Length: 400
Image (cartoon, rainbow, N blue to C red; front, side, top):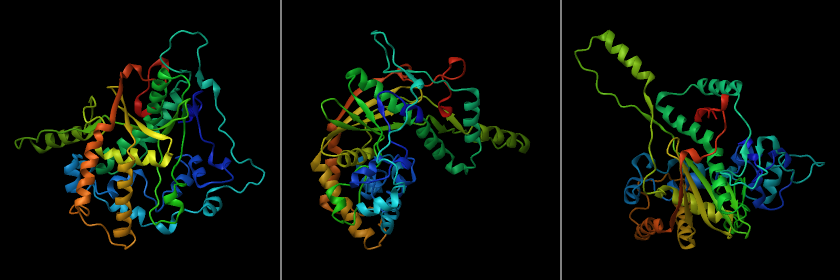
């Protein structure tokens, strides 16, 4: 991510230690995602990672009605536990100033990130070029080995391993996917800017009037156009690793050979696969995330872009248009979850909204939102800009 922050068309956030004053609740969006301040702002707050669960979309009946894959239907207990931490929720401007900023009276309010200009080169010729800037950095053998050792040093239970792979994949590929969006929209309009952003929405009227439900959203970046419009940018990186399914070992195999087969299978229990993205191009469980991001970014944000990037099959670029009627209904059900369960300290039961006729209508509205989805383009894998590795080869994606 640090390399992307030096891109000439990317506007990074400052280091958290360089933010010394908060003049408006929305100023907390200047804290980077990896900062402790960004983490602290999530206590007791309903953010995009918990929205689908709090809306009941991940319950058995609603999930089935919406066509959400079974693996995503994990219930709402994690959302309930997050929102129940209300005592730690930072809401007021005074608390934000005291708890989140550093005490340095000689520092300026907002000191920009210092860019490393040598990382990116803009060609001086007027020739057509595939990318906004040439990536001059190369991964050294030492950097690759450090990354390899970091991944190997982790001690993870086997049942959590595939989830860890997916998290590592998403983290290692996030900057590359944002760069894919930057290059794509730069081709359409060289005047665009991609801006890093933290948690948005702290200054929404709903949040500053003392409501028990506090919301927030952190897009992966914001796309700013010369005409003043802005789009939320969200990236999803599809991990190519899946569990390997082996046939049952025949009963006539002796114990020595059986143990050998088991050891070999243990080393090959995950497979690297090629899998193109198929319809629906925008899975319905991501709709609350994008709608909440548009709401929290502000009234000038009329759409959100999602980049779904794969390891070998390129990337899809999708746009979802804002629907304020749906957003209002989303806030109604999030508030009801807060009032019925969190405020009363009653854990939600399974299928907690299912019998409500208004809720069934809301599910139907959600299914109809697929008409608001626009497939912008498919980017071939060889058109995705990546770091060069040793001797000019592209490094393994996990080691980028």
